[in-house]
Length: 352
Image (cartoon, rainbow, N blue to C red; front, side, top):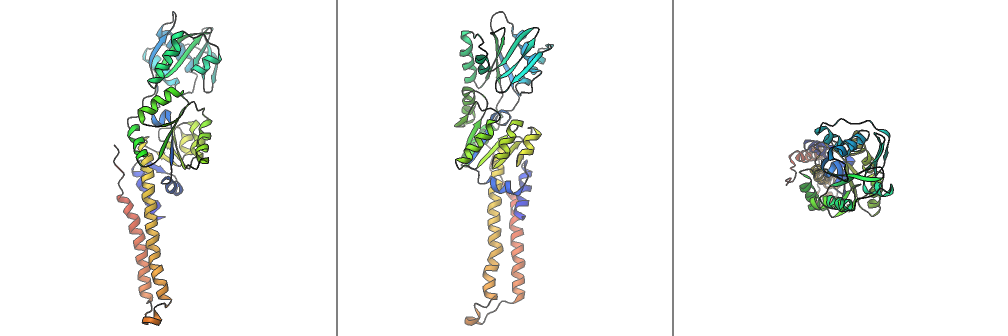
């Protein structure tokens, strides 16, 4: 208990809040770290970086229609359109018959026009007429780690938006640090395979699982556990909560939702992936300290009890004086407390 208490306190100094001793002890034995992409590897603040229009549609007109639709959405990407519209001082239009389709996009009526705004899957299922250049442009956007969002009206494509979520500055170094420590890193995302692999290349992740629907994250964690992996899940959103709860240790990004934080065992206050490596390092140091304390606590008893029982008396006439036994017991406590306090001077590895 002394080691766990000091270890949790040391982790807190590094901005890592550990909810219980079990999480602290388990973190050192994780073999696979699963990272949600949006808001975990990336900043979670998407930006519209390019608008491509078709026919007579103007860029500002397309942005106005898209932002008007997204004003009714709770998806993280919606804020990117609203920010872009605000930057151009566009007055949003009222939307009727709004509907969000999970994993695809949104639809609604704006100025008596039925609009669809979403990914390629949504457009294909709605049998939207594509411009020949649209798919090629979508692939080019994906290769740049951008998400292609399509806007359709009256059964045909009228605009494309390139939306990107910038990678957190420390993500590359933190992922490299985890891999160097021997953990396998897996990225989960709902993005298409091209976009996901582009992000993975930038941060140095080899295993990517793309096109995962929100409810599929928990299943991915379960699959890894069935393969014998001890899984640490890192996420920040409401849809990450079931996976965070199922994982051997759940890590919630501090800037994430309350539901994610409540479901996780460990909260990263600084919202940096370095916190995951920090938690695992202090966990290893704490478990090592616990083993040392167990040795310190038992070595006195192991040596003293046989002597007190008289094992040496027939040979040497030696018995253990109760004063000596009491002194040894005191030294046992001093050893444990002193050794546990050494954790206060633990230093995390250099964050490069």
